[in-house]
Amino acid sequence: MHRVYNFNAGPSTLPLPILEQAQEELVEFKDKGMSILEMSHRAKDYEELHFGATNLIRELLGLPETYKVLFLGGGATLQFAMVPMNLLPAGRSCDFTLTGAWSKKACQDAQKIGGVNIIYDGKPNNYLNLPDPTSLTVDCDAAYLHITSNETIGGVQWQSFPDTEEVPIVCDMSSDFLSRRFPIGKFGLIYAGAQKNVGPAGVTVVVIRDDMLAHSPNTLPVYLNYRTHAEGDSLYNTPPVFAIYLMKLVLENLKEAGGLETAEIWAGKRSSIIYSAIADSGSFYFCPIQAHCRSKMNIVFRLPTEDLEKQFIKEAADYGMVGLKGHRSVGGCRASLYNAMPIEGAKALAEFMGEFAVRRG
Ligand SMILES: *Cc1c(COP(=O)(O)O)cnc(C)c1O
Image 1 (cartoon, helix red, strand yellow):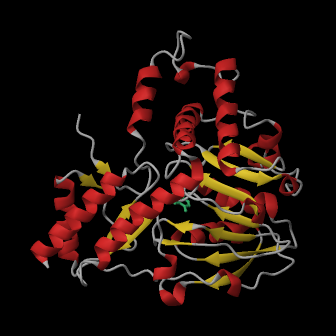
Image 2: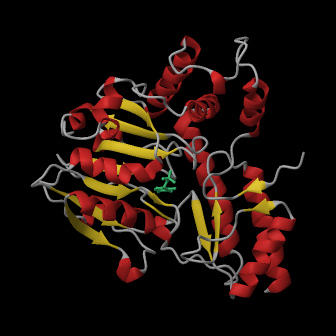
């Protein structure tokens, strides 16, 4: 077997022991004579792992009783629509911060549903910066403030969150969910597609505060109403069972490793290895993002020419480091360093960066 260091932005690298456990259990799950893939979602064994996964998320986040954890299909993208459909009543508006490609997409869907007030737009600085959270003025009548905690494509990450008093924050945490601690009390709703940091594609985690559930109009189609999933413990219809199973293994692994505090320390170590490699290269590598908001998950950087970038990506792949091409909308290079990236992967990349810069600089 030859496993590469996988720097893809998502789907992305998973811990090898988990893939091996899933492989071992695939054909027969716990002496049941069938695979988890074949099992009813009403079976006791499935329910055990379903609620096991819910409880692990509760535990890892330290969730108060007033929050529910939901497992939904449709990716984070469906949440761009579900959030305003449920939480943005007619005649009200929500506030938005536009910080890159993902928040723009979320905003476009919200605008189809109701009133949107853009309180920050990073366009003038090409989305290479984030506002000081204390400088934002939130409309005190807003139904919520939408934030994208980490812009996966642009490489900016909020280091702290604004104080919005009574206005709940709704946050797309797809690409940094469970990579650090954060003050849960500020948030009315958090959503995250699992395939960046916590599992495979197919399941989206939604954490929602009970008072938010009261807003959903009864006229919504049943699947699109958060109350359906809250009341049915995400078992109203068939949940993405295999994705939830794999995510549970990832969550167990994270808990054993020490939870969010440990994840935060490792994210700091991995990212500083790469940012240091950029800084130590003289001006061969260049990170265009303002230093105070650089992402610890997705590190974007440029080389002196596009030709060198192509060479760099190609040669890195020859050394077993893949997924370093920047998103097609921004170009350049991007190293995604999620929870499952071993520190050795970051070190190997930094070493290659240093060697390449000496050779081609
Ligand atoms: C990947 C990503 C999405 C889209 O996720 P899907 O599950 O593919 O719909 C949304 N927001 C952010 C921040 C992402 O990184």
